[in-house]
Image (cartoon, rainbow, N blue to C red; front, side, top):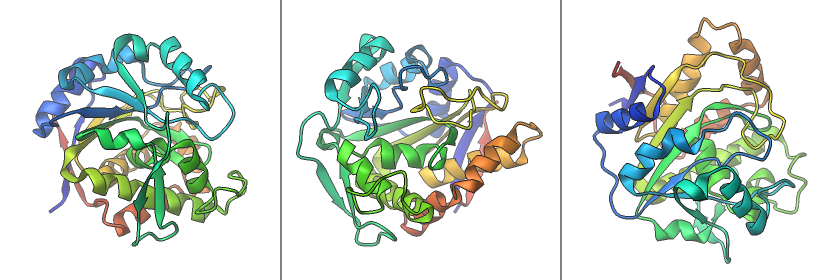
Amino acid sequence: MPSKVYFTKSINKEALVKLYDALGKKLKGKVACKLHSGEAGNKNYLRPTFVEEIISLLDATVVECNTAYEGERNTNEKHKKLLKDHGWSTHFKVDLLDEEGPDYKFDIPYGKQIKENFVGKHLLNYDSLLVISHFKGHGMGGYGGALKQLSIGCASSFGKRYIHGAGDATMDMFKTEQAKFVTSMGDAASSVHKYFKSRAVYINCMVNISIDCDCDANAHAPCMQDIGLLISEDPVAIDQACLDIIYNSKDLGKEQLIERIESRLGHLIIDTAEEDGCGSSNYELISID
C-alpha cells in the first residue's frame, strides 16, 4: 500500500493543526519537536509563531543539537543564546539533545555506508517525535527535508562530523566523497526513524524555498513561490512527494533548486533510506483543501 501524504495549499499555523488532524495519528507521552532553530543571520527559517499552535497542542519540547561547524550554534552557550534570540525558548520548552555526553549510539547493521549513528542522548527521554522541516535546498545535501532532520538534525556535534565524514569523524567534512556523504545521511535517518517507529510524524513546509539551508547565515533569497504544507508518518514518502512537486512545478525558479539537488546527488538520501527500510517512495498525495 502506498504511504499517505496529506497536502494543503494553506500556509498558516491553523493549517498545521488541520493537517495533523487529517493524518489521524495521535502522538502520545512526552513529545519532542525537532526543527531547525535557524543560524544567526538566516532570514528563511520557520518562525516560532508559525508553529506555536501545533507545538502547544502536543505540549511538545523543541529539540535541537549543536552544529559541527563554526557559527552561533556550535556550543551549548551560543546555541542557547540563539534559541532565546530567535524566540524558541521564549515560546516553548527547549532541549539541546547533546548538551551533555556521552552520545547515544544507534547501531545500523544494514547501513550502506555507516554502521553507527551518534545522537544527542536526550533524544531517548522522549516517547514520540514530531519533525517539522522547512523544505528547501541544501549546500551539501542537495535538499533539506524530513530525512535531513532525522540524520544531520538529530545527530550530536560529533555525530554530524561522523556522518559528514561517511564514518570517519576525523575527516574534513567538506571533502568527503559526495555519494558516500549523502548515503550516510540516508543510513543515519533510518536509524532514528526505526527507533521511534510508529511514534513519529513528519511535516514538511514548502515555504521560503531557497537553494540554501537554514544553517547558512547568508542564504540565497527564495527562488520559488510558496507551495504549501505536507504531513505523513513516512519520511521517505513526504520527501519524495516534495521533490515530485518541485519537478512538476511550472515555477521557473525550480531550475535553480533542481540544479542544487542533482549536483549534490540529493536523490541518494531518499534511495538509501528506502533501501534501509525507513519508508517508501510510493505514496498517495491527498489534498485537504
